[in-house]
Image 1 (cartoon, rainbow, N blue to C red):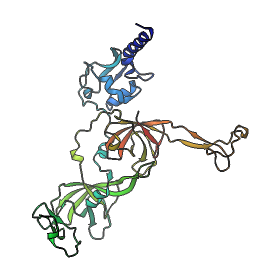
Image 2 (cartoon, rainbow, N blue to C red):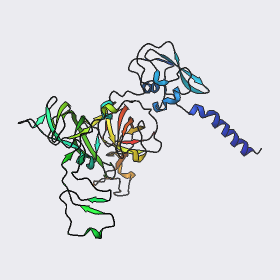
Image 3 (cartoon, rainbow, N blue to C red):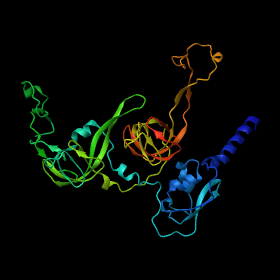
Image 4 (cartoon, helix red, strand yellow):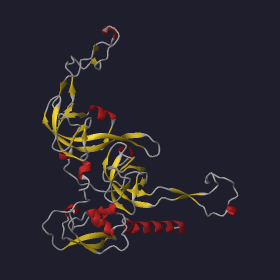
Length: 392
């Protein structure tokens, strides 16, 4: 065997032998043992051992002493060991009777998972809305009644004779024409007003108020309209108008607020596995819901990337600070004889661009087509709207 081939084979064998060691990175100063406490999560525990907590499945996978990592209980003792060159956690001791810990803490997310935080114009146009309150009332709060319209889908008075009937919108008329000029089997039916109301498909509603437009940070393209969560309501009496009762509110309920069928009771499985996106994702934070400018750990943020960009629930993204441009007021003049290049301001002072710095990590928990919402799982500094986010 020639020497180059021997060197190549040796390099391949070294890479294959070291692959298990490179599969997961332990963090400096990691413990060798932890005792699970109430309130711990798999994400928290993995973060004590791993440089990248989203690699937590590798720490628990193929571990005969932990058949199901979802069933780790407070009081369990977990020790770090090595199997075939890879770190593993081994359970020791006896479990205590209590509920198992979760993958990540979703207490902060339960409300956000059940609310429609993004609406398009069609959803706003087709949703029910509050038309008024009791006499003399302009705003309302919990416990008060309100009157609403169009909580269900509208149904026309006429019954189309066939699927080939073309219905004109109410109030729209056509110039005189003969149906014989239409394709065979087609006819026009001029607009019957929409008067019948189908029974609402829901009895519990979220009260929302259309807010600002979400736009792509770089291009300015409109991605959707944020829906401000106002409160909740339940149906008391069907009709036009229907009577509802306001059951909770985050702000004062007003006329014109929209009613969206609640999905809170439909959300049963609040567990998902954090991981890395299947493709490179680069975007920006475009909002910190709640009317604040700075966010910290366990705050919710919105980014200008969604399912169309390959994001899925559970994906982990890194947050960096934005690049900053500062003026170098101390640069010696004799070092630059180029006049006024682009990296100088109008007074000739040099401008220096400071690089991005790590600011934290986010876990995506709700994904729309072009926008996603994430939870800040860790933050080394205050996080602001406009900060870039990237795949790990």
